Amino acid sequence: MPFTLHGLAVSHGIAIGHAHLVSHALLEVNHYHLAPRQIKAERERFDAAVAAVREDLRELRTVAAENQVHTEMGALVDLHVMFLDDPMLVDAARGLIEERRCNAEWALVQQMELLIEQFDQIEDAYLRERKADVIQVVERVVKVLLGHPGRLPRKRKSAMATIVVAHDLSPADTIGFRDHDIAGFVTDVGGPTSHTAIVARSQGIPAVVALHNIRQLVEDNELIIIDGTRGVVIIEPDERILEEYRLRQAELELERNKLQRLKSARPTTLDGEAIHLLANIELPKDAGEARKVGADGVGLFRTEFLFLNRHALPGEDEQFEAYRAALKYMGGAPVTIRTLDAGADKALETVGKRSTETNPALGLRAVRYSLSEPKMFLTQLRALLRASHHGKLKILLPMLAHAHEMDQCLAMVEQAKEQLRDTKHKFDPKVEVGGMIEVPAAALALGMFVRRLQFLSIGTNDLIQYTLAIDRTDEAVAHLYDPLHPAVLKLIGGTIQAGARYGLPVSVCGEMAGDPAYTRLLLGMGLKHFSMQPTQLLGVKQEILRADVGELAPKVQRILKMDEQDRVHEAVDRLAQV
Image 1 (tube, rainbow, N blue to C red):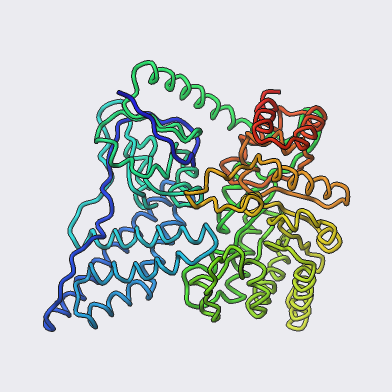
Image 2: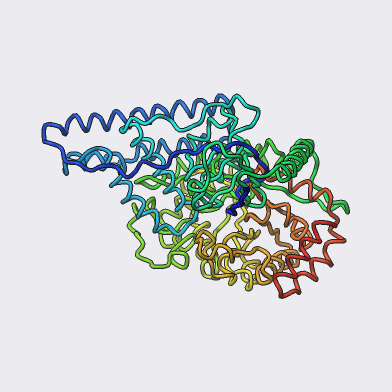
């Protein structure tokens, strides 16, 4: 009998195939003491396992590059190599073997648990979810120590593809998906910013995560349908359901092929409004992906990758090279780079600000943190300004709420310029500085922003979270996260309209910008700059080409006056059918 499970939809599309259960972590390892004479051999056994995993990861990185697998996956494998080289993981585990005379598996898992505790203190959801990468790296080493084989299924001889069912998956696991007929995957854990979600979207593989216990409910070889758009997983569907989804799958494939034809089309609405489609990127080389889909520029380049998992802050030259690389990839198109947006975390403990906050989401994070560390902030500003000599760079300040924060930031930008003049470094003296609208206070007091800044970018993910007072990564309240809540729409609409009134460019760089279901709503609000993952760009462009802003605007104004969520949802659904 068929049954259905609901999870988080993180990668659109439909996949039909037979289940392949991937074994869960082998982290419940035995603990035993060694005789002094055994310590040297145990340390060598540990080093050999680490070396074997490092070599596996390097080979996977080569395979990813040779097969032109998406750069994000290669970057995630690089991240795993970095964790494997992290002294706080490997050296510390080796120290436990010697000091406590314990076996290698137990030492490594103990050190992993210490690191996970530190990751749990991180406020930023993206960085917090990197703890899953630490666990996966440790899993790989433990498996080598225990002599377990790899986990990917062999390619099936039958026409039906394979659906991977796992507790979680590593980037290394997913690189071989294309060679194993993996049609999609479902996992017990994960969130929208987990690496599994990133990989699924980058490969265009349908995926549903956060299904809690699907591994316990599904048996090997059972037939599964993944509806990655609705977050639905159907196990053992009957023939009627199967036929319905096969038809929808064929329709989606046809639609995907049509989208490729839009790469060179200008994003202009039916009534002639020119829209700018920009990309969100994590690494400099991701800019190459943005160019492939015809992005007009980079609307959000996150710089956290430079600060993650290291014991020393990145220097000015290292940052400068990274920013300049993104500008070069974009070949003269604008690149908006956000200054460090992180709270108190492991990477930043090097400057002595380890957090003891009980609620870091409301504490020393983003621009607040940068202002509390002026030396670090000045270094980043100097690197950004130097890079501005090599392309059209714009500086974006995260999570502003107060006028004095903007005044301090702008003063530090001027200070950085003065220092560069003293050292004869070239930079664009007119580089634009903008701010993110991420908290209700900012959206409700825009006057002080438009008087000081040259552009605004709405971060819908945080704006929704702070407006509704919920943590969307907290499974207990995640269902309350609603982009169409009337209060959220009023803040977004009000910001876009205020920007137009004052002649200040406004973009949206949160997930709403990349979801075609909201494209007409945002167009009707007057939005002209959308920034999203490169893989989402063509779908949004298609909606823009079909839309008439003149017709949408009065309808959206009526939606903005509604105060019942159900009515708003119904009205937005109707908008999509215009």
